[in-house]
Structures are given as C-alpha cells and as structure tokens.
Amino acid sequence: MALATMALRAFATEAPAANDRFDPRTCAMPVKPAAAQAEHRSGAVMLAILIGADGTVQKTRIIQSSGHADLDEATRAGFARCTFKPGKVDGVPTAAWQMIKYIWSPEDSTEPAQP
Image (cartoon, rainbow, N blue to C red; front, side, top):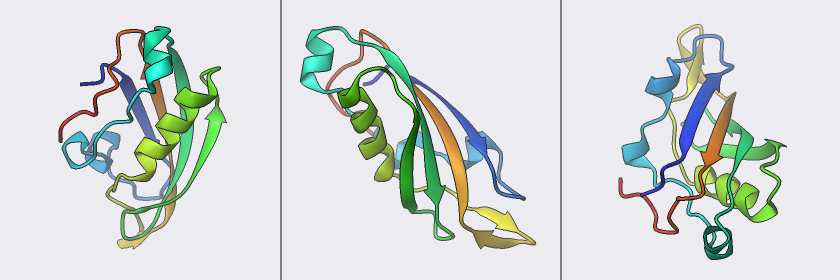
C-alpha cells in the first residue's frame, strides 16, 4: 500500500468538501515505478484534474513536477483512472478543475493500494 499523502482543493462553485470529492476506496492509488522504488526516490507532484459532470476525469495536467518524470507520469496516470463527485453550479453537476498534491515517500511500494 502506498504511503503517499494527498491534498485536494476544489474549484467548482458548489464543490463538495475535499474529503467528499474523492474516496480512495473507489480508486487504486498511483503505482510507484520499479526504478523509482529501487532508487528510493521521493517528491511531490501537483496535478490539475478536470472532473466531468459525470465524475470521470476528462483531462490531467502536471502543474508542478516532483523532479522525476516517471513519478509525475505515474501520478497523472493513476488519478486519470479515478472517479470523483462532481462540483455543482446552481445544484447542477458541472465540470470543474481539481488540484491534487500527491507526495511520494522513499518507502512507497510498487504494489497498488487495494480499494
């Protein structure tokens, strides 16, 4: 199980609280690349995710790199497979950007977290 830490910030007008938007039980966490684990690499990735009105990820963009391209891509690819609770405008689900900071620690495993 990954020991990474995550922080969420929503941009929708009526966004659910950060903890309500994301449920780690419904999405496996990113998997650390084997080379990064062997080298005990760590770092923080700031990722922007466009969450569609249906809760699926529409787009992802690296805002701040961990300094390691493979960790950045593992973060992006991992969260691209997740679903979220969409934000709302006037009570109607709408697409909105979500910022996620994902922190890789040197001890993280290459094994995916179990939902």
